Image (cartoon, rainbow, N blue to C red):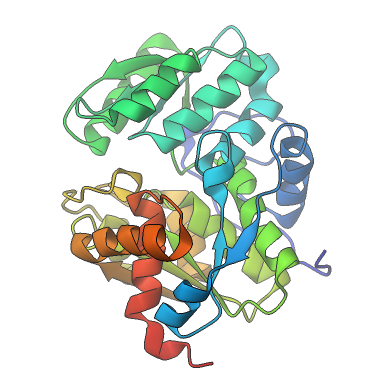
Length: 320
């Protein structure tokens, strides 16, 4: 385990999606928060493997490790954040319940954790939501509320419902407990492979990339964290580039990174810690989904395959 990590980020989270609670301060995310999250998560989720595939190495021209978060119960890293959040707040929210907004993975994370800790969960989703992820939400016992045609429509409606019904709003990004939870995946990566030069992370709301930046800053300052997003939904990229929260078109088919706005807390961390941000086309992502099947025998959804698309785009950076 890495030692000698520094203290809290001096940031103020959006009060819109945060209630005060014990255990983790309502703005900054510290290394201690991530370690505490790992202890909580370890009671419910297993550490995931990180494997190499010779044909992927050959494609990129470097040693490439795939962190298999698809082996989590919900098939995505987001569940780490959901379990951490509910571990801390379940007693308080057992009767009040929560509402969130999602295109799928974040909603499944909160629904899975809600079922685990007996907390009522409502998930606002666009009308064209992924039917497979809808089925999973139903199995976890979540109430699904359809609203609008895109992620940002669902977000606005969830915020309105939270105020009207006095449900706790669990945002997809502006929530320290979620960031601390998903950061445990990056912590496992630097522990399992000491020679990592870069980590490439897909960005929608940005919790995964923010968590990776925190781990790099605290434990491996030389580690480069690189974000990737579709050029058809570039709001996070634009926000990072301009150092201000930006909106943008949201037309990608990749639901896991389909957002139309930047988020305050995660962007604040990315502005301080991200080494680079790449945008790729939807066609590049589709090609990378095929490559993952052919070369790694792994069925990767679009958001995960976007990382391979970015690695291929940047392959000239990785000699030897």
